[in-house]
Every structure is written in C-alpha cells, then in structure tokens.
Image (cartoon, rainbow, N blue to C red):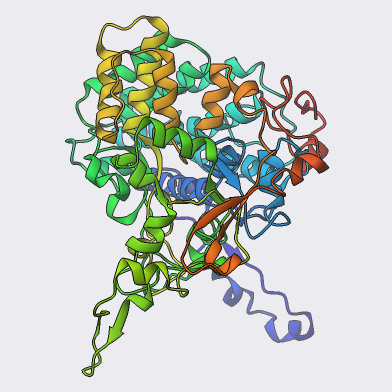
Length: 578
C-alpha cells in the first residue's frame, strides 16, 4: 500500500533539522490511501461493513447529525405523524418537536424532520462508497454481492425519502460538496427507481440457508430485495407488480411467524433474528464500548414509560427498567380497536400493550417481598391482591401520566433482557427493517386490490391466527387488511405510510392534536383507599386551542424539506403548503 507522509514543520528549530529531512518522512499510522484501497474482495467487504454500520447508526439514532436530536429515524417521525400513539412526555410542554409532527403543525425548522432527512442521506453516502468504487469493476462474485447488498440498503433509504418527501433527490453517486441536486421527477419515479434497483441487485444476492438461519436474517438477501421492491411498487399502486415480488418471499419458504406465545419477544434481545425477521440491523455490545459508542443512546428512554411519574414495578424478577421519558403511549383509538377486535386475552394484545391492572397487580414491586433472617429476598407471606390494591408504594403519582389513557406500551419497552448489565445505558436488541408479518399483509393488500385466488386470504389468516384474537378472518378484502395492518403493524413506523397509500389519511388523522388526556390514580390523586385509574380530559384539547391542528389535505401528505437543506440548495423545490 502506498505510504502517506506528513510534513513536520517546526520553524523555531528549523536549523536543527538541516540535512535530516529524510528522518521526518514518518509513515502516518492508521491512514488508508483511498486511491488504492478499493481493490480487493477484502476491501469490498470492508466498505460494505461500513455501509451496514452507517445504516445501523443512522436508521437507529441521529444524535450525530447537525440537526442534533437523538430519536429513531426509522420509526419516530413516522409514528409521531400517526393516530396510534400520543406523543407525550412529562407534560404538554415536553416533546414539542414530536407534538408538532403529530398535530401537523410543524414547519421546515422541525429538528426531528431535519435529522431524519440527513440520516437517510448519510446512509446513501456510505452505500455509494461501495457502488462508486466497485460497481463497474466488480470482477468477482464477492464484489458483485457487496455491490448488490449496498444497492438495496441505499434503495431502502431512498424509499423512505420518497414516502416522506415525495421528490427528494435521487443520489446515485457521491457528489462534491458544492453540488445542488434537483428534486426527482416525481414520487412515482423514485418508487420505480427503488424497484429497479432491487431488480439489479437480486441476481447477485444470496438467500437464507433455512428458515432458522439467523445470519441470513441480519444481511440483505434476495428475499429482502423482493420485499422492498414489493413495498415500493404497492406504494405507487402497482398492485400486480407488488403481488409478484412479494410472492417470491412467501414462496421461498424461508420465513415463518413466531408462535403467538413468543410475540412479546419481537423487538427485544430474546427475539433477535427470529424466523420472522426478513431483515434486521444487528447490534452487538462488546466490553469497552461505552453508552454513546453505539447507535441507540436515547431512543430507548424516550419510548419507555414516564417512570418519574409513577412507582414502577421494580421488585424481584421485574422486566421493567426505570428511567423512561414517556414519549410514546397507546392512543385511545388503538386501544379501543385492539380490544374490540382481538379481545383482552389475545397474544397480540398482551404482547403489544398492558392494562393498568396488569401493571399494578401482575408485575413485581419491592413491597411484594420481604427479607428473611438469612438475608434472602422472598415473596411476602400472606400478601394478597386485596393488600396490593391498598398498597400506596405502587401506581401512578398524583402528577398523573400525560398523554395517557391507562394502557401501557409493552411492544418496544426497554426491558431488563435488553439491557447490557455491564453498562445499563446500552440496549442489546436489533432494529427490524422488515418482518414477515408485513410481507404477508402487503401481499394480502395486493391480492385484495387485484382479485384474490385464495393466497391472499391464506396470508392474512397466518397473521390473524397467530394473534390469537376473537375475530377470525374469512375474506381478503381491504377493510380486513386495514384492520390487521393497524393492529399488527403498531409501532413499526408504517401507519402513516399506509393511511397515505390507502387515501384514508384525511379522515383518520383529522383529529390529530386534539386530544391529550392525563391518566390519574384515585389513591394518590384523590386520597381514595384503593387504586383506581381514571382519565381526566379537562385540558386534553390544549393543543387545538393554541394551534391549527389535524391533517391538511394537499399539504400533510408529505413532510417539509428542512430549512437548512433549502438554504444550502436553491435548486430544491419545497413541498406544497410549507
């Protein structure tokens, strides 16, 4: 490898070095000459690893961007624009950047939007490092595979840019710093580009070796490329094309939904790289890596329960980790739907959300235990449900839980199993970009739109039956698809995308920002002798009193291009209404 030298100039001692210049030609350690680096199969693999690392880092968290926020770009902006959660926090003064998005009162200065936009292009840049240097000179199968995997990772980022901003520029190679790319021709053109990129990659990609292949779940495969192509095509309402692509994943027989009893493990350490994972970004902690040395420093706290407003279940054997900020709480709409459709006893309900009674009486609190003379912690003798109902050391404080209706998010809660005990701030879970459940539901949607031959109903039944609910699917129609997608895809970042695609956003999101109730416990709030949760909606409409809220047709279908991007690039045309 060519040596790179540094010149050491010390003016005050220059005479001391006359005649000794050669001794100053010291090779700089740890520096790679990029002009000769991109050559071998090993170089291609290294560049691809950097692309995966960047995708993991910037799909998961954006605290390293110029926007300076630290939520999850793959999930958060999308979830905050939905009707399936309340963007809450400690009170109505907290989480304003997320509330702006949920109430559709944001402008182009919103930091969450700016951070997400920047992150997607950071991923594209890392993928272009692979494609720019190997695409035309891929003379081995290893290089071809590396190019193909980077191509699909790039397509994933470009797909999200298209769904969020419509005509965000397509960047097919790394640009000079002064480049000013123009908007893409149309949103449909970008979506078709994504599908075409997947087609280019598929011949050089590999598949999982079996349904249980965990390594194949954490890399880009042929089947993920087909799934991504299907999602791009269904987003442009090419249902026939989407149906064909998605069927390739189903027909591969390489994926299976985890049993209903195991649904609660999805998105957690025990559910990494399951048979259901079509593609996950793999995160592994190693000794010596500090909290901010990996990719998820604050997302886990933002989305966990607001534990400084409640006596948390932290007794022996708890799964709960205190310290959360309570930004994400189930909406009344979602709670009502899953209970009416699935029932309280379904696997899906129990895996996704918990009732207040479950939190109070089925989770362990310190007061449920006592210490023996030998120093052992054991369950308290004679401690009954009646005692728990009168126990003031459990339950919500008198300050209440803002943006809350008495049901607690469980699906993505940061749990003890996810926590690396050597560094309690580190989460050891994977970020799933595509689950097999989403593939099945997208396929069922394509079948419902084109005419079902029975395979769409079969796909829909797999999701429905795994949920273990009281409502059984009997037909593959759009009403059923929409309900199953709403319930199954909760907190997967797809609800807003779905509503836009279905043309339902104006109706379903019209009331966004109009209702932020507070949940209280009558024991702490009102001095009652037993726990009783209740909702106070007296100030729930505060946001709509101050701002024009709710989805606005002709504007809210897309997010605004960030202010700093508009300032740097005069060729970028802002989306309508901003």
